[in-house]
Image (cartoon, rainbow, N blue to C red; front, side):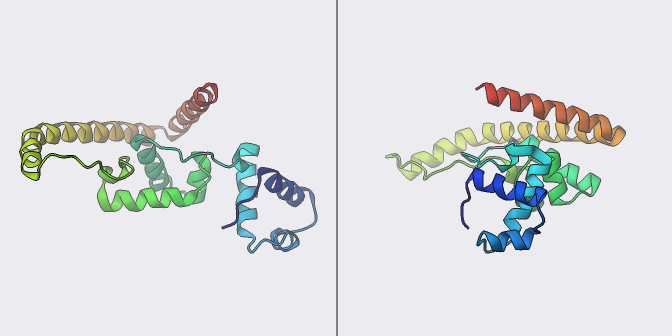
Amino acid sequence: MAKYSEEFKIKLVTEYLDGNLGYRSLAKKYNMPSRTPLQDWVRAYKTQGIEGLKRRERKKAYSVQHKLDTIHFMLETGASYQETAEQFRLNNPSLIHHWTKTFNEQGIEGLKPKSKGRPSMSKKSNKSKKKEEKKVTREEELERENELLRLENAYLKKLRAFRENPNAFHEKHKQSSHSNLKKKDSD
């Protein structure tokens, strides 16, 4: 897939919004293989302004709770992936599809961040590793179970609050995501 500059995206979006050409004609005029990126850019611009057209410098890591909130918003309201992405200010609706599929297949565990890279090689033998794992395994198991129960409890509380008053839930979420954006901008 071709990478397009922010200036190019802004130029095409403003030309589409101001002009006489449709998606297909503009894509053809600028030798784009498809009109789909242009449609996505216009949609992102309409919902997020110029911020929606900026290229993300690095992949953003979303919390398990944020992923759960996004999935359950979509399921409860019947919103499409695109509508949910717009609600949660995400540029990539397929990300929500991926989260939903992973959640359906693996549960909350699947939404937890995975460690990246290749595991380090240690000089300990396999026998000593197995003994250490057995000593720690029970404790880790209980910690893991506690964490899952905390997540489930927090999710159920949010779901109950959402069902009682969906509008208040949306307003609160908008405020918290707005304050999170301010924090990131100041960093």
